[in-house]
Amino acid sequence: MHTKNFSLEDIRDAIAASLHSVKAYDLPGLCTKLGLEAGTEEEAYRSKRSYVRSRLHGQNLNELLALAKKIIDEIGDTELEDFVGELMTPESHRISDITRRAILGALDQVHPLFGEIPALDGLNVLNPNWGMSGPEHGFLNTLYTDVVEHFVQRNDYSNSTVLKYGGAMTCSQQRFFDLIACVLSPECRTDPEQKVLVPVLNELLVVDGFSLAVVKEISRRNVYGIRRISSGVQGAAKNLIFASINSKPDLYFTDAINNEVGIRNQHDALIYDRALSEKGLLWSDLVGWWGEREGVDDLDVAQRSLYRRLRDSVKQARSPGEAVLFDSYYRELAPQFKERLPALIPQVYLHYDPKTSRQRGPDKVLLRERMDFLLLLEHGVRIVIEVDGQHHYAIDGKPAPARYAAMVAEDRRLRLLRYEVYRFGGGEFQDTFLRDGAVEIGDQSRVLAVNFFKELFAQHGITREDG
Image 1 (cartoon, rainbow, N blue to C red):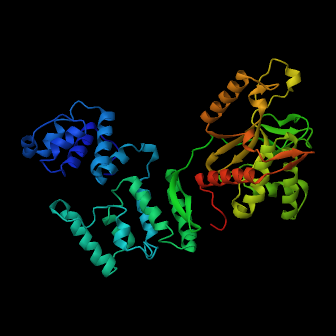
Image 2: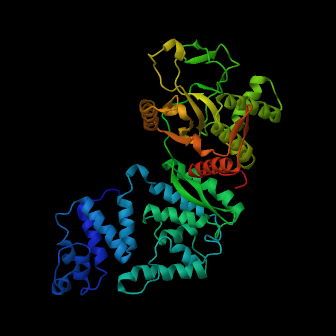
């Protein structure tokens, strides 16, 4: 069923095959319940398939899919559910048969394949009809008997062989993903086994645009799922201008042809002048760059120095929300994610107008030049995080619809460029206060920030160093 193109006739055949399992005397009533034309038991007894197909002519794709979903809800047909799942999976979101075979080969090194779970229970993930009796399941029963003898009793089948017998090369993509999740589950794998197997499988999945990600924890053990990797923003990052403090950076081109930029007032902003790797920009990368820039060999000293420099930039914004996000990120997450921690970069110039707002006057070229925070992740994923104060939607305390409209229009533009944009309302940080230039961060605000970043990391497959 690993077919790439489906016709309406294929869908009609799948629906008719599904309803063929219904007793002839029950079929007319069920079809009526599903919204199909009424008929007689006599007609159904002559041919159940013909009875169903005659009622499907003239229905378009959306109507046939809606009917298939009703049937799945009504009788729980797993084969029809797989068929619909494959039909709804775009060609660009499929893993190839080459990748399936490579993954099955990698699983040959895993013993026992399903850990403490009985092998036949594990194989049910691929096909819930294993071992069912009746003439319609004759072929499955033969395979089932074969697997019991050679995989359970004598153990002379490899993992890949038994998985192919179980349908791993022909099942729906979702069932194949469910198989991987099952093999990696805490019930099947220990922590050390997960740490060995996850990178191996990720290397195979990534070529088709997928990766494993922690979706939840059970008893502090990771549970993995498979997610589609965001294609991210097109093009390579060339200029990262960030951490502005006082005045606007006074930029100039050192090489206009190569787009190399310098800052005359370097104490007011920083330029990260290294090429980004496929992994994005990690905190450790930024610390290494800062250490070389400042002539500091001790990375711990460089880390503390860079943190203070970035913190000064956040303080300049005088935003309690920004202070909460920055402080919570590095205080709470750095010890957990260590070398895997992406750099949370404050006050980043997304656009740049060489003239100031005063020089431009009413004839402004750009609405918003800086973003509050930026994360640069793997595969070109760029995440913008903003904290909205009153100035985002009001002027002198009065609602300013035009200002708000311009802000959301810019958000739409960024999303179409494949940036991810997340906004916090300033009112979400009710227990955090600015007093005499210092920020007092409340527990609720810190929990809000930490939970957000952990959920964001889980979505993008960023795991703790000990996880």
